Image 1 (tube, rainbow, N blue to C red):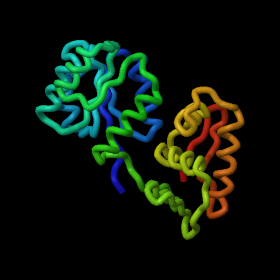
Image 2 (cartoon, rainbow, N blue to C red):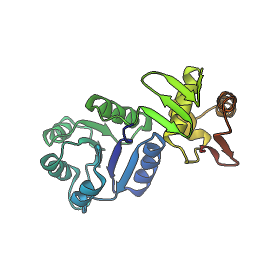
Image 3 (cartoon, rainbow, N blue to C red):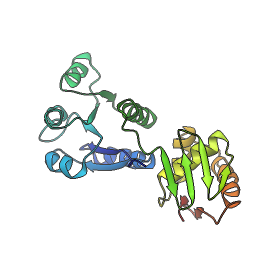
Image 4 (cartoon, helix red, strand yellow):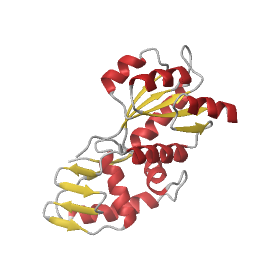
Length: 223
């Protein structure tokens, strides 16, 4: 199995950095977030990201400056975040090697879609075969097995299980789950519990409980 895709996220706005880092991690990526690019070279050497998300307006070296350094040293993907929605700004970004551009204020679903598209096109998409204990989910084959049993899941149950497995050990709120699996920022309060219940019954037909409820917080998949 390949390792999860790794993302370096450089953004000086703490609220934006924290919020988007949470969403990226919830989507299954390994994220290192930084307020500036002062230690860029060391971070790239130790963290070895697949993709860098760079704010353009940063203290010290700008996102364009950081992209220039990265292009001279690596072949990683670069996505810019900026409030400047002008043709000249976009051209400047692409001239220093940007692979894509997202305008602020950032729509989370758009950012995740752009990130996934870049990683898919480059062949660096996150793990396609997921394994937790005796549970295996093969995304390309659309196959789920627990022990010796092959499980029949609906498409939404498959997506829900894949999301939980990518975030194994992480407590996920109903809103995080509905946002990532259904694309809803607001949801029917019964939507997630009903599908979690259906998925649990299928999984527990072949072994002990894997999806646990953390009262007041959400759900977590763990052995």
